[in-house]
Image 1 (cartoon, helix red, strand yellow):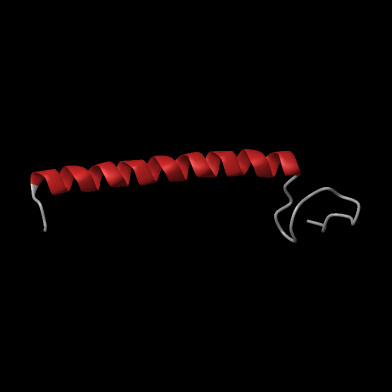
Image 2 (cartoon, rainbow, N blue to C red):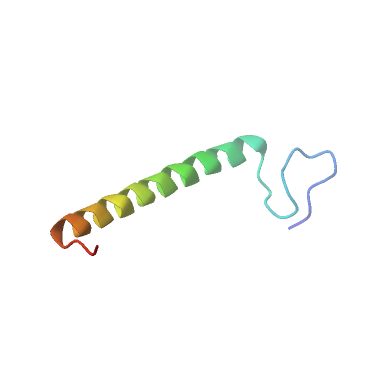
Length: 54
């Protein structure tokens, strides 16, 4: 792979993403991160309700 030319609108040194692709990736990444965090919080609440540790 060749490095992008200086006039190219891609971000970073090795990302090779256009601004639109970067925004789409960020949207998917944040959605999955929030979903994982939500499931983890619900699992902790359920475990605490079943067997409190404090």
